[in-house]
Image 1 (tube, rainbow, N blue to C red):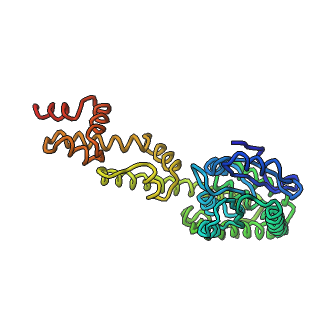
Image 2: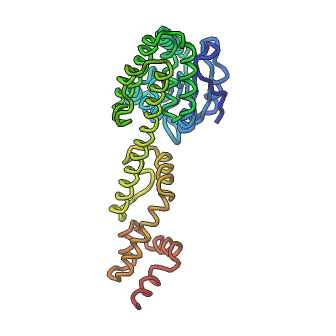
Image 3: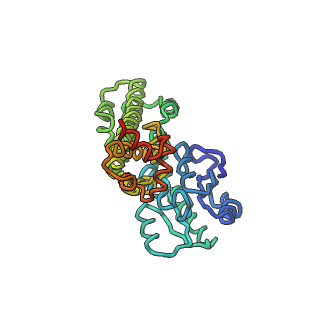
Length: 361
């Protein structure tokens, strides 16, 4: 993975773009042979897989993502789906050698701006980038009309999503110092509009800040603040409460998901059960599922599945009611030899030795 300097805001008059492409030649061609600067863009990162780009976007941001569809760990469509849900302000252009309409239809459903078929026509790419730059210019121009706070709105949201409390506080107070000369009524109006926009953004994604913060994100509180310091503190408290609420909500969601997965494994121990199938069932990427499970339980998902199978097998062997082959099948092993090998490696005894040992007792 190549990664260039992370930028904040539209510095140097350039919009930030990242390239996600698993083919080496295509990746180098896009990153080195396109006149990005001439079109008003600066390449902030080049990645060979959607998962690498997604991880980078947790702590960085960009204006445009140029991504291939078919990649090993995370496809361009999956990346687009995640970004559209978590960072809807980023514009996405899909690149693919696949001409099937279904791909294009799915890409557009995730808010992708364009769908370009490989090999990429430079003139077509230039037209797409020119169109995106016009949209970004228009958006930024509208934002700048609101005393500068809304122009930094996207970065505030990204810092909230990345749980960057210190950056949020620093950014808010830095802005407030620049407009401290305004009358309190005007400050209150600007901050009310800003907080209302954040609330609207989250509500559009079915996540109400009032509910997330248990009522602490309350824009009406701004009416009660009578001076500059009180307004600053009120807004900061709401933003930090939103960060805390999102963290709490995410933790609860992850704990609930882990319990559901554990219950499913225990109730389907005789069936084929692996990380890929579980990830598909619970609509997660395999890498995210494995990280989440390990974080919440201290045990890898594969180790947990193995432990459940071996514990169940041990119980069944102790009962002495079933043949070794039947026990193996009941815990998801259709081949007796493989089951015996795995059981002995895990328990220290072969299934027969283990059953006979308890039969004697």
